[in-house]
Structures are given as structure tokens and as C-alpha cells.
Length: 215
Image (cartoon, rainbow, N blue to C red; front, side, top):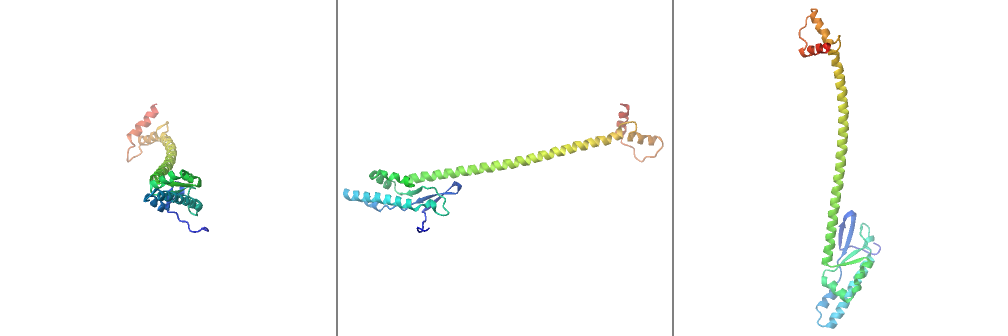
């Protein structure tokens, strides 16, 4: 950027294409001197410098505006990681208003709170996956329903065609069996008149034609 090179230590990917920036450059040199101090005077001087270092890092991160970096779709809050729980606890004991870092969009996190936050991210991804599968299931169900609907519509059309074909079939065969001049009766009369036939008509058809006449 115009302000120089800005490279986050960690970028955590969130659902919906968003990111969470984690910074892990908080200096603990003064805290180390505080822990190893030989007397109270050295300890007080060291803890004061430690708190100043924490506050300076908060202000530095607030000025970087990672959320405005090109290609980084991050929330306004940047996580400032302090790798030792007691380092942050002692700083709070000395100056409790360090918690107001959140007003500068900086969230100070220790190993415990950072792991909790990452577990929340994990749950968000799990919900995202479930939502994705639910959408896929709904899409598949919709496609299946549309296919089934199209199939049933086609089958109804086939059924109507079959009904129509059966109607034509019955009408055609009625010309064979029904009425005094039906075709089977006429064919039988040809035989009675001495017309030579090589193959007899099916007996069932002849009987049906006579039955129609009797009725």
C-alpha cells in the first residue's frame, strides 16, 4: 500500500468469503524482565514497560487498517494474540483499561480465548456445510419433482392415446360382429353358398357374431 507493506501473521478464512486477521507480534521482553526481577523496584519498572508495550502494539495495529487491504475481506476487528496468559493478566492488573482496546477494533486474545474463537469459526464452517447440503438436497428434490411431474404428465397423455386406440379398436371389431350385415356373418354365408375356403374363421369369432345377432 501507499503506507508500506502490510502482511498479517495469520488470516483465518470465514464463511461467505470473509477473513479474520490475527497478529502475533506483541513484545514480551519487558514481561520477561518483570518475571525475572530481583526486587520490587525492578518489577514495577518492568511491568510498567510491559503495559506500555502492549498499548503501543494495540495502537500500531489500530493504525494499520487491515480491513481495508485489497483482497482481504475482513471484519473491522483484528485479533492481537498474546501467547502467555499471565502476561495479559498482569498487564490488566496494572492497568485495567487495556480492555478498551476493543474500542479501537483490536481484540486482545490469549491462548484460551483464541482457541475458543477458532472453535467458534469451526462451528460456523460446520453450519455453512450443513446449509450447503440442505440447499443441494432441496435442489435435487426440486429436480426430481419436476422430472416426476413431467413423467406423470406424459403418462397421462399415453393413457389418453391408449383409450383412444382402444375405442378405435372396439369400433373396428364391432364391424365384424354386430348388425345383420356384419363381416363374419357375410363370410359365413359365402361358405354356405359353396365358396371354397382354405382356412376356417376362428370359431370364437363366429360364435361371438351369432351371439350378437341373437341379442
